Length: 480
Image (cartoon, rainbow, N blue to C red; front, side, top):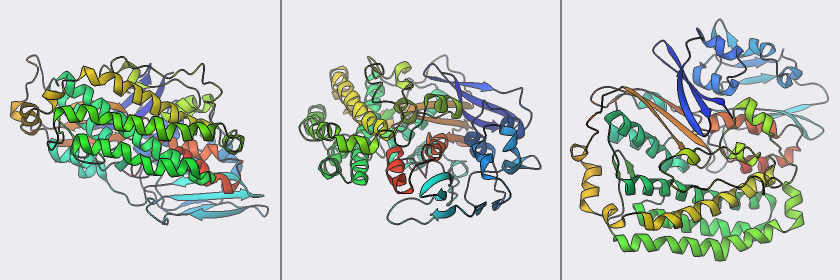
């Protein structure tokens, strides 16, 4: 499947990023002369265009826009309220007024949420207790991450990268590190590359276990909730054993990986098997118990459906595409994932059909997939080298790193990582001293938030929390 997955502008040149055969390709878009050209082109998802090229145009007054307009796929009919005088309106929350009929009511959730949830605005239009349409507006904090990065060196830039979406700290830091390595022409040791991929998978495992807990809690199914809420700590503990941080912060840096010097190489390799035992003896049996419970299945099956056609049309990514039965996975073509086995979509077609159940079941499939691959790779890593002073010094002292002899400096490079939510895309333009001149970041949530909007149309309001939890999208990853 080919689709547009990134869009930015460097100086006067529009640059597109195309997802094609489990790779992302960069292309200069010479046929596009203005922002409006992208808004009118159905090949460019509206959410991507508005996030990449949109500007703050103040309050959105949609009170004169018939609600039927939002269900119409004709881009020209939606054109008027998404732009003005050649500028595109962003998707940040700046106030929102919508049309409400006598048989309907509207209510808002956010931007201030209880607990630790990040700011986001959800405007529901409801008829007979079912959601007619949901409008999501984010970016309430306006963090300006891409502007903050300007002028930073690789060390500071990678540190900021770890804050883009806190539950994807490892994936973002690796994406930045790979960008810098390509810019400078550094060849990374094979064991370093493989171990960094393992850390990305460990991040995926830990989050997925936590998400199984969250989904189970929203269903009121506490046997699986209890074990996953507790044993998510086994994944975080292994991350801390390997890197010194439960979230892997500080581990990924240009040219190497910083490991926990308080343990030795032999301890590092054997530490994985505690997580394996926890998963196989505690988590997996409770998952299988839940999956065989007809009440649990009926609660999720057929709820909040996203179709294959919608994945293609709106550019949905990662988990959202795979749970709909679309076999997309950047790891298949990634040389840093040797012997990677993609999911068997044929035998799991009845469990990957786009609903909440699919998003629940996919997490179990991906945990098992990542666990098996990590175990297979343990014997392919030179653990002594990873924990050696040489590797540690190379990661700290960039002067010790060896560049490709045929390397020619190029200021713009991009990298992508199959993070746990989906493909993370990072584009850096740097000066010759490696300080950042400009940056473009596209979290998978930028596109996938729209999937949540579509999934809950016609769904009871009371089912929104379960749908929302099953996607678990990033507010911070959108608010850049």
